[in-house]
Image 1 (cartoon, rainbow over the protein chains, first blue to last red):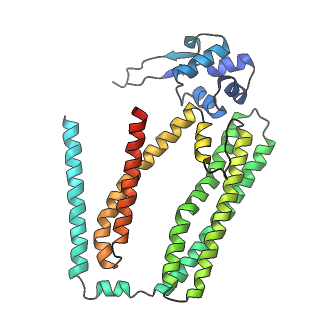
Image 2: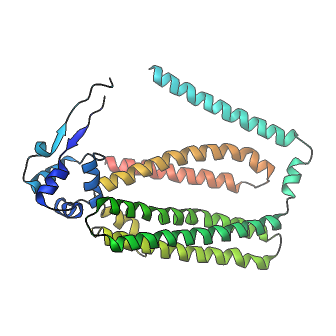
Image 3: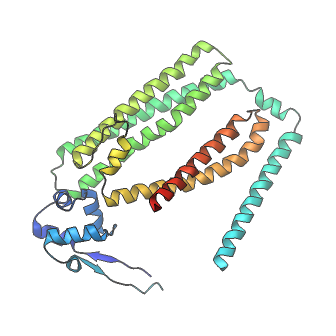
Length: 73
Length: 245
């Protein structure tokens, strides 16, 4: 069972008009972490997810979506 | 439950195969062709010392040149980077892993190489010992130079990173300046290294049984392996215990 966490971080970042490094500075993370989150290679902690939502001025659910995939059961 | 039973059976089979292999090797060595151990011990150590010194020199020069070449290429690309192209910066940071890998290889093998060279050359000409000693000193200088350049470039690309290669607590400062994702990557890498090292120590301990008889190495290799293995496991469990507290 795969449990993917989809995110719209790249879209939110484009709305703010910042690059990955600038986004990283805003949320207190590195450019690589921002890149990993956008690619779906890393799921941020609750704290980081809340920081991202605050910076983007939206709720956490507006950025991160949790969907179950039962195809592999 | 079936999975657990399979795991236990696997471990038992693994131990039995190891003991069988050690038994066969020991039997062959002790009861094998006459003079086998003597033949191995009579190998010209002086010649081995010279060959190892040449390999040591070639490896050091080769890895140093390769490291500087890759670093220079990465620096040139970093200087041209516009600050926006995300694929380009990923590529540059992947390139910087290569000189770090090479210096790691140099760091881990240099002491071993120089120790073996010095030991073997004492059977040939003691004056020649200065060559591996000089290579060891030079390799350490190159390692520090390359690591310093790579770290400074990483800090230029990622200004939140802290620490200098000459700091005594550089690794702690660097790790403290990493964010949660980077720390997680480091922790996963350390755990993977711990598992691999445990397996390696286990295999080496068994191999040392016949080797110490064959090569008449004395007790030091077995004591060294046991000590290192113990230190690694004690450090690991202390870290786990401290984390829980």
